Image (tube, rainbow, N blue to C red):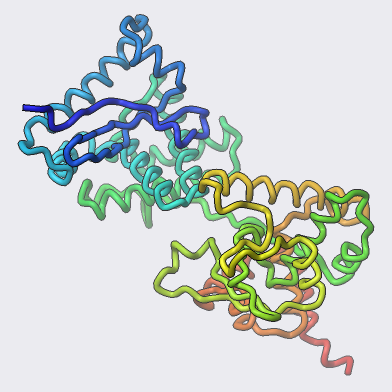
Length: 420
């Protein structure tokens, strides 16, 4: 009888991780019906490492230990597959989940989440989880002196988290913001494991009377009216500065629109003198309460769009040549990232040349738009509507991050009517 299933270990070269390695996947293939599925593992290698560890017939002494672990992983999968007659992917998936030790492994859960995010084209979030995982593995290696391949949920206690925070800040010199972002990923991994019934909720190390993630909010900076006028009237020294200035003001005049949202704009978002779109940032987090943002374009915004747009082939055509529909999601992500860097780098030089702080970035357009609205007497509800916030609390939290000078100015502007 012909073999029903083939199992092998392969490098998934579609995704290069932050450490310049590729994730190792368990490849399961059935010729009839013809189907392939890749399962995540906790390992990642460069092509050379994979060649020296797995593909070679004679691994060196330093590689034998990890090769034996990979052989055990492959054998485990083969045994489970051969016990299923006829082979069935659904039953195979269930059999993998019954491996108690694997389901208790935080590193494996991380990899599953990273793979899921990539399948959903959430490349930026996937990269954040990769960095979080890398930092945790580095911490464990630093603490134990050994390379880590397994980390169990029960090992991560409030004290463990306190030590991790201390290591990241004092040894790795990372900011509290970075630590907070990485630990929010870890907390989400715990919640996913609880939802999947891999662990009991009682071992969750986060929360009241346990470990609290640092909650340091970055102060939001904005340009005042005088600075906006100086920047608008500034003369760029080259076309790059001019383009950066144009897209910064396009963001400002379009409700502080994120540069990613600008890159994703299509002609069907544009109707006469208005834009209607959904923020990319909230598409996956507020599916039940998505609020389209409508922006009425002023003359300056229209001129900038006309200056940089590409001719429409169809209503679904992209307005700007920042990305292409032929690009993969990872290429789109990198192009948008590079475009944001281009705008920020050139804008900083232009601003500094005109007596404005070189701390300015594309995000300042959003903050400047918000403060301009408030200073002109608009309510917080109006600002929340312009931003597409799902509730008032989101808008309140947004304004809580502004610096004291901005808050004082907004407060003083409320007395403008006394000058009438």
